[in-house]
Image (cartoon, rainbow over all chains, first blue to last red):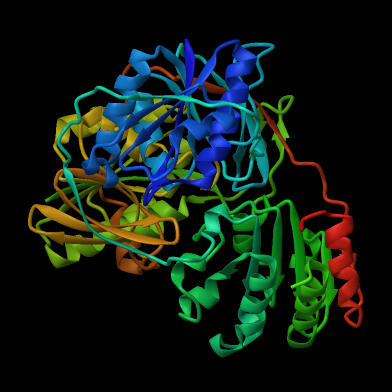
Length: 320
Length: 247
């Protein structure tokens, strides 16, 4: 018996959300009295044995270059094979873009119940119950998994990374890689920025900023905080900011530790994308802006005056 | 070409979320239900666009639900689509629902199966992947663009910080989100026509649920915003550092 964690990688590095899944999986293994093992597909530029510090006893690696291109069916087949070999009873994913494509396929392949969007460790006192977000962040559901093999995909920033001592044993996985039916033609991503889905702090701007030329106050604050930048839907629709920055009902749903909303009124559709943030700060000159009802801290004032001063104060505090 | 669009009924975005029966059921009283936005604005509209480009295209809609959902299905038919199936069942998790969809798909040999990215009530994002695996088909999830070229498709898929462009041969399953199409409003002709389009009610096939919801919970109520005067933004930074400890 074991707990298997899929460690998603991008350009040879394990994604941050997968490290969270590793820590989560290690704890689940501990609760079940078994061991946690990881699986990595494709070319890796990191020391895999070092992943032992997140509580993983073994890493199964399949370095084949073809696996540097994502194909959910291929990945599902390979992970299913590995799961059988190590007798994995619980399989953990990050509920990120790749996780959302693989986990449901694997659920069918292994006839394993899946909880996607988990936010807590499983409750084991009365079966196997996993809490997940529902109603777009407005509630939780406690979901019971009834099958022998169970799959959990963990929401980003829902479980804190735990580091300890430990070195993992690294083994080469020996499974057949099925042919891919999907051809990856091109990958277009912004490099050198904190990816929004992994960011612990996010600074976001809305229509209140009046135009893309005014975004300096957002990017300056983000830089000072080491944060990712985001925006509301109207901003994205008007092409003031790149589309991947759009957070909300029809954009990305995020759950950072700190969400700074500048010049955003706080429509329900926007809240649906950010209501799981641990702390929300709202800067808006309209005291009636609905966002203040969802905020933890706020300033009613002119963003163009207030935000640069916040940035200065942050820099002073950080000594930068 | 034959397209299947999977549609769901969900509570309206602004619905108040509350639970009854000892927190085991969603409180439906007074709640307005809608067609899941991702299904309507992206999956269904894209299918309709493909039919507008090639009128020989046939679009089927499928829903797993009770008779309450019929008005929502008619609304979808008013937007577009030639006929609909409703699998008469409310009991079942994503695996159960995907099994029902796969049973119809196996009979009808669709070239393309569209779903929305996720439902706004359960947020599972699983139906597309499960249907693809049940049918042994390729799956492109979270598509932001879909272009058909003969018997294959070029699909842009969202990844961290950007997009990936994939090419896939049909038949395939694609889950759709913003970018795939633009929301439409049904016109009078569509609404009138929807009344006579076939809405086939069929009994579910035998399938398991692999999970079940034990109970629901609401998050703890927020304490209420702590307002800091605009002339003292340094105080906000101090609070975030010392009190909220977020940096």
